[in-house]
Image 1 (cartoon, rainbow, N blue to C red):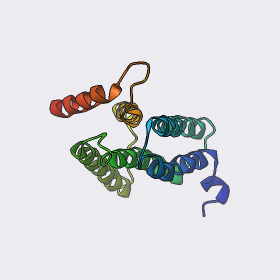
Image 2: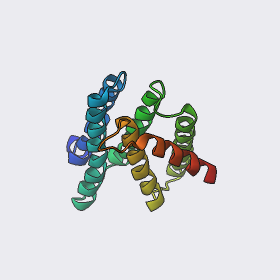
Image 3: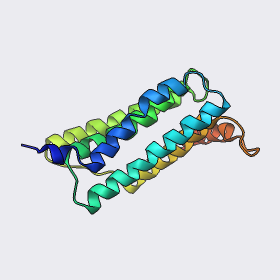
Image 4: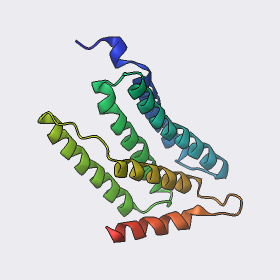
Length: 168
């Protein structure tokens, strides 16, 4: 039997807090102006940074749990994919990019689930971690959407996403 302390340790609590950002995404991305775009982008970045800390704490203090192995990658996908889905109706990201991203995530999850059922645990590769960081940067720029210090990242991010998908 898994103890309550093992299940609700600090890393898992941080992961659950990251998931709790999702309702704020719904509220703040429904009709964002310049100020609320910055607020939600900041909240998104803070939530994304906690992904590093929960993993670091879990490894350093030997607090890795089955629940953590399950929740952590799901939390990343929930927050990033929800943000992308919510930006479709406000015109900040094309639906086809979101669809391809979600399909790719589903394929990876199915492969990991099959491997797990055979007793094989597939950890995220460095390339997968770099993909996540790139997604977080792109989604943050798309959330902000407005020029800051004379820089408008939105057209650049959209062009980069299209060129990335053409190279695959």
